[in-house]
Length: 115
Length: 113
Image 1 (cartoon, chains in turn red, orange):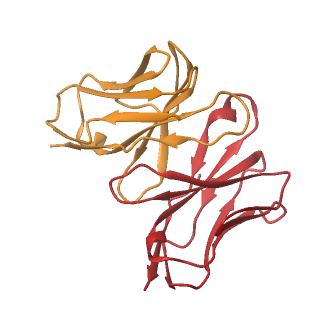
Image 2 (image 1 turned 45 degrees about the horizontal axis):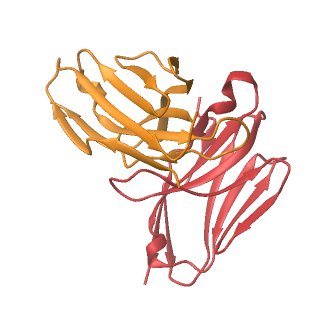
């Protein structure tokens, strides 16, 4: 049962335009959400997070939006740069006893930003 | 600042051989520690996590085990590797308690032949 879904395996965007990466989740106990960026042969790098008490969090070019009723979150990158080309993972953490420590990841979306 | 070290970066091992991957964290104390695996075409799967020395929780039944002999040291082991153990293994740490992100090492690419 895939609790965190990234339905687009890949996305291609022109440099300077907006990149929108989407993520859906099914577990209503998730209350903390994160986005990671991963280059080949490296570990994921934390980008930005949001807790369920907010619907938006912004950090420079990166903004995460959370729609709890739709169980949907998205990452906006504006403006997109070629160096943003990487695999982006959405992750979520529950808040029910022993699951409080664990992140559940989506399968990732490969973003390609074309010069 | 905190850093996480994971080694080796790549490893090729024959089926039936033992495995030991090591991970250490610097610059923090009493971290939560994690082992994840990324198989080809799949997301990141949590294998083990630890909230303290000697405390290991396993997420999936498998051919692997984990140990935490010291506060900032986490070891992934196997007595006999299987072909299906091939993958990209990632160690991570997070602060204990509250909403804090995981910070990953650079991973170990394990190929079992």
